[in-house]
Amino acid sequence: MLRVGVIGLNVIGHNHAGAYRSAQQADLVCVCDKLRDRADEAGSRYDCKVHYEVAEMLREERLDAVSVATGGFESGGDHYEPTMQCLNAGVHVLCEKPISNNIEHAREMVRAAREKKLYFGINLNHRFVPPAAQAREWIQRGDLGDLLFMNMALWINNPNETSEWFHLRALHPHSIDVMRFFCGDVARVQAFLQRAPGRKCWSNASINLEFANGVVGHLTGSYDMSMLHPIERCEVAGTKGRFVLENVFERLTFYPRESPERRVIHNSLFGGLTGFGDTFTRRIHRWIEQVDAGVPREQIEGSGEEGLAVQEVIEAAIRSFQNGTVEEVPR
Image 1 (cartoon, helix red, strand yellow):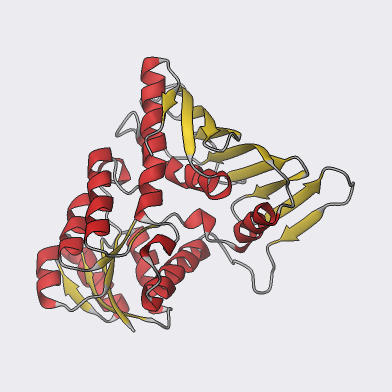
Image 2 (cartoon, rainbow, N blue to C red; image 1 turned 120 degrees about the vertical axis):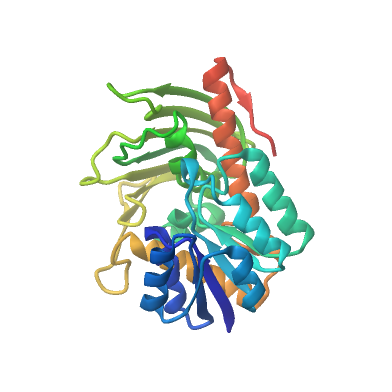
């Protein structure tokens, strides 16, 4: 039984806390938030101890793992300090995405976890759904043949204007992680960005990607779309066929190249995901399972290394737009 805590108790922190409470291998022993009212309310809700400072929590509790669900500038500005505090205390960390909006901080976090031989994961929850697992199995089994191209789209409504790069750094760790999940490392990117009327944030993105294995891809992203319609679409094509994964988990369709028959998998009314919140539960339960089982660090799914890899793509896309160039992605 893992003794766990949650740092940061806004909406996303409650998703983490609720997932820990429902996991058989975890015991949520404490919550921590610098806003006392928020921490006290969470402590009452989950019937656990309350802390207002990370240092105090680490000093007083015997923890195996924590979730860092803080936010901060560009949704990642407050991840570095609590993550490093916990890693330095010998505690495994599951951090919200983005790993950090500061690429040097992100690299340091990954390096620290590696040097201390601790588990470090990122909440890249869009991949932790049954249709994504099925689609990846089709790729690995050779059903698609040799991969050729992929198209990815992720668009939601978010009016946040706190940073011109907020859209890219805060939203697209999800989309780029899904692209890497299916097609591997990204080698080069070329980005074009656009502001919707009246916006300060670069709220629309068109990004070309070349993968290390030669696959070519494209990402379309926006912060100007309605949340009343599907928010995500992923298409991967190969020499034998292609699949389309719609709205994260709602429907997966395989289109074989030589046959008019399709394979269609709908999210089941019975036993399927009941809503987007279930993606948090599935991801966090998988984190708990792997840490509790003591799997080798390189087997952690949605690892810190993978979280860093998607931020490297995002930073390369920003450089591409700024310089009008095709940018290499550090690996």
